[in-house]
Amino acid sequence: MYQNYKNVEIVKPGGLDLKDRLVGVQRVTKVTKGGRAFGFSAIVVVGDENGVVGQGLGKSKEVADAISKAVEDAKKNLVRIPLHKGTLPHEQKGKYGGARVLLIPASPGTGVIAGGPARVVLESVGVHDVLSKNQGSNNPHNVVKATFDALLQLRSAETVAKQRGITLDKLFNG
Image (cartoon, rainbow, N blue to C red):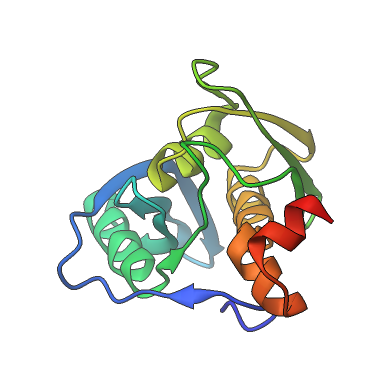
């Protein structure tokens, strides 16, 4: 699922204290010859609020089954996100489908300034201070995936220095 991203650390769910948060449940309808068949699709984000997060989608005829399937799917897609003092290491844009998300690091005490699905993802990661802006589509599925796109592109200062083959001191002091 994350093969298009460099430096993504995939995490196993064992030993982590994961909390699941429901982003949304949609009722879907399939029109058949015998009438309408109703089902439910649920999108869930799980995270340990310390840099590990995953998202999943579950579908079923019952709401509870759809949510539990989504939680299981999310636990299969856990990744580690680099954080810096309760915020993000740098500004980043993400997009998926028609949804675009802009994430901006904020000073301590700002809080999570984000709407709906993006807020759920950022709180699950463990970000305490961030500014964000949703642009384009506000479809919860696409906003969650756009937020993940932005988070997966983040790189810590240590990673950048290692990739360039220089020390952290040289990275910051030229």
